[in-house]
Amino acid sequence: MLKDYAETDQVLFDHLYQTRAKNATHLSPTTQNEIINIIGYNFILDNIISDVKKAKYYSLLADEVSSHNIEHMPINYVSAI
Image (cartoon, rainbow, N blue to C red; front, side):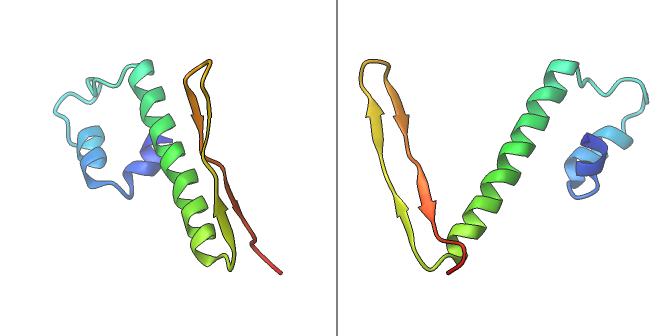
């Protein structure tokens, strides 16, 4: 997955393919998982933002569960009428 993403990210591409020792990328499984989570999160977020921008109607709500200090911000939108 990182190699696929590296095709669109020059910094990651250089890190993966331009290192002197091909077996020393310094990407542990933990680091790989963190990068994958960040990329996945950004991909999903970008798709949601794109859909909301295209929507004719949308709403944004804010809520908090004070006993647990957890905040929620759901976005509702109409994608087709």
